[in-house]
Image (cartoon, rainbow, N blue to C red; front, side):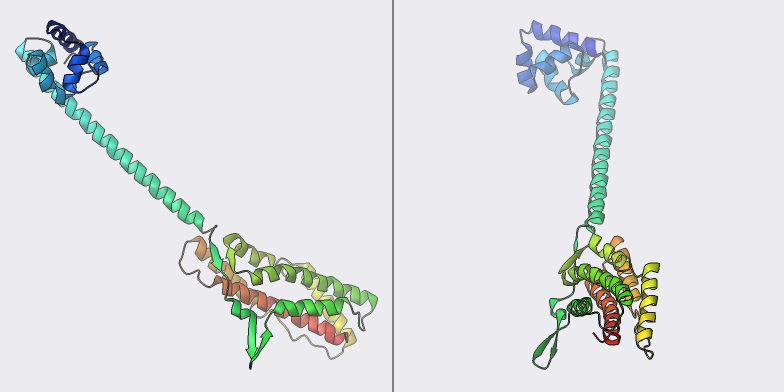
Length: 294
């Protein structure tokens, strides 16, 4: 099929019949620009239009396709045209299939990305507020370890007791560290929910001082000071489950990172970690208060 020959024939027969490009276009329900393109050999009519166009021009489809009265050439070009049209439609279907597949793949990818990223913006519930208090008979008692810490820190900070200035200075260095940590921890203790970033920071921050040589140095000096003022003093406190809870929180964070559904209850682990750690601090503070007769 020769587009230029077909176009020249369409133009010639159209003019012989006294038809304008727009009149032909209206009969075929296409634009006059489409007819103009055919006549200039830029494009060819769609196969669905060939029958109607051949009727308008009073010629056979084979003649229209070849622009020639040669029957053999017309048949050959008709077959080629049909085959090329079939290939074109096959290519269009493949292209459409690829577009659908790629679109679906992108949607799934975006969905999974948003699902994975959402864990960083979710809120993870803390424990129930009723855990702030305990009941003894009909009386409500505070179960806030941080209130106890604040009270003892204030007592030690305002009363030197039996300690010398040098010993008291060492003690206050440690007490100030505890007070500073407790201030931040109390905020986390009262939270109703945690972001992933907050949960990730708690195991780090709460052990930032404990895991240093500075902490061990302080603790060693304070034990020696307490023994100096009380020969019968013995250390009876330890970290208990503090490190266990830290590891459990880290395990929960790993599960959240993997999008496991087993992350329920992490707020309770945070509470247990904070209670355990600051109960340990409270024991040390009470020893200082008792030995120094504060």
